Amino acid sequence: VHLQASGGGLVQAGGSLRLSCAASGRYGMGWFRQAPGKEREFVAAISWSGRGTYYADSVKGRFTISRDNAKNTVYLQMNTLKPEDTAVYYCGATRRELALVEDDYNYWGQGTQVTVSS
Image 1 (tube, rainbow, N blue to C red):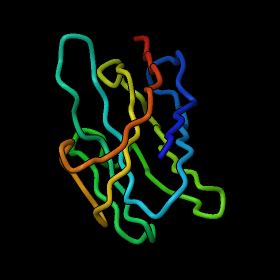
Image 2 (cartoon, rainbow, N blue to C red):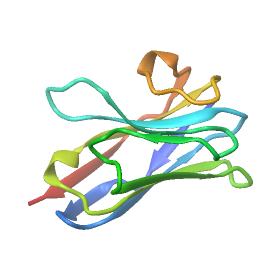
Image 3 (cartoon, helix red, strand yellow):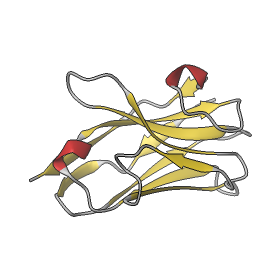
Image 4 (cartoon, rainbow, N blue to C red):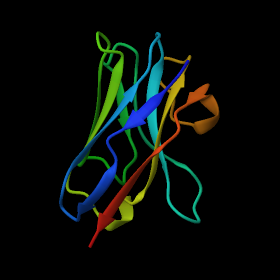
């Protein structure tokens, strides 16, 4: 499974970005992020059907994960961005319906940098 993440960039605090991850196949999908000097952390996950979603508390109400299975693409809409959201964002695919833990993911994309300036 090849995952291709895109959409990162530099944005001012309070701004928005939308990340995309192209992935073929019937997988639950998730976004994780890793800031400099920190471990990779869970951000959001979505089931294959799209009916199940889950968010980290730090992004709840600001980020929205969605998917378009006809386009084999998962999105992460990020609004009201904060400097602490600065990180490399990774998309992952899991054979589980929905997964919140990094070890439950089977495939990873290469990551896309998100930088939020204050």
